[in-house]
Each structure stands twice: as structure tokens, then as C-alpha cells.
Amino acid sequence: MRKPRDFDGELKALQDKARDLKSRKVQQLGELVIATGADSLSVDELAGALIVLTETKDAGKREAWARRGAAFFQSRARRTAPAAERHTGGARVQPGGAQPSTGSKGAA
Image (cartoon, rainbow, N blue to C red; front, side, top):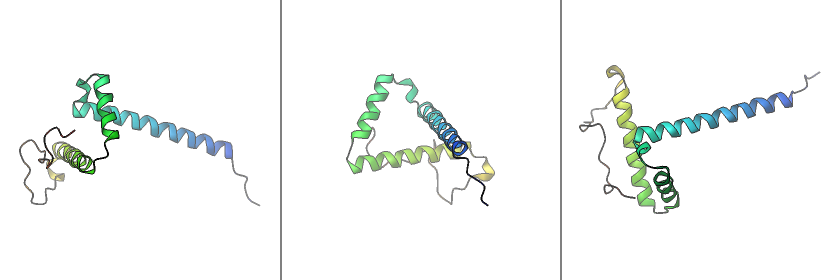
């Protein structure tokens, strides 16, 4: 005979997991704002910039932003990784660690 499932227990566990994931997402967004220096912007400026980003349909701009973001995270990983764990694959890193973006400066 099969053991009956505890639907209430499973539902509670799923709700707890969803709450934890949402909390982690909010924390990571806050850390990202701080890491990028966007915490120096006013709430209105930051909200306005995010709204413009989400409304932008230009694939070229979005691609340029994505490349710039990837370069940001790669440069942070290089700065924080111990020297023994760094793998540059023979590629030279420019001073400051960030790769130049192909988009124009401040492409918004």
C-alpha cells in the first residue's frame, strides 16, 4: 500500500522555497546596485533609467548593454579570484580589468 502524500507539507515547503528565492533575488539586486555605483543615484533617477531600459526595443542597444554588463562581471571575477584560480587563456586584460565596449560611451 502506498503512503499518502502530505500535500499541505509539500505546499508549505514550496512556499518557503519561493520566499527564500525571492529574498535572495532582492538581496542580489541590491548588491548589484551597490557594485555598479548606482546607489549614488536618487531613487527617481534609478527607477527612470530602469524603465527606459525595459522599454527599449532596439536590439543593438540591448546587445551593447549586455556586452558591457558581461565585461563588468568578468572584470569583477578577475579582481576577486585568487591568482592560482585565474585563467586568462592567453588573452591580455586591459588595465582596470574591463574590456572596451563596442557601443558608444553612455549608449542609453
